[in-house]
Length: 130
Image (cartoon, rainbow, N blue to C red; front, side, top):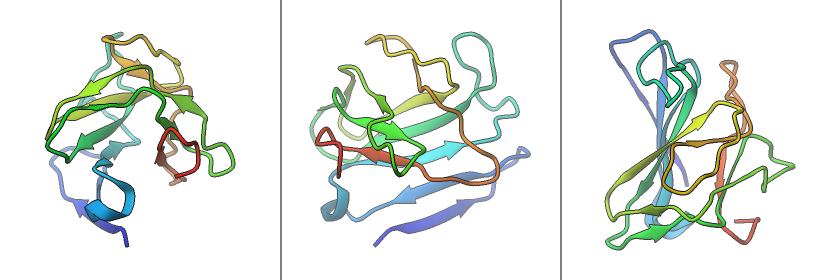
C-alpha cells in the first residue's frame, strides 16, 4: 500500500511526498518531487530544473549504483544511477532536467523531465523490475 500526502507550500507549485511501509519496497523511497520548479531550487547550471528527492530510511548507508529512475512504465531502466552513497536517514536530490549527467560525486540529472500534467514516476531496484 502506498500512501500519498499532498503538502501545502508557500510557493506556486505542488510537491508530492510519497511514503511507503518499509517492508513493501525496501528502505529507499521517492520522498518528494517537483514538476514545476519556479525557483525553489536551482541546479548546478543555475536552471530551475524539475527535481526528485530520494530518501534512505534505513539505519545504514545505501549505494544507489545500479538503481534506476524512470517516467515510463514500459522502460523501467530508463536512467541508471552511478555509484552514489546516501547516508542513513539522509536525502539525495536528482534533477529531472533531461541533461543526463551521471558523474559520481557531482549533481545528478536524469535523461527525462517531469510532466506538470502528471505521469508515471518510479525508483527501480538494480534488478530492473522491482
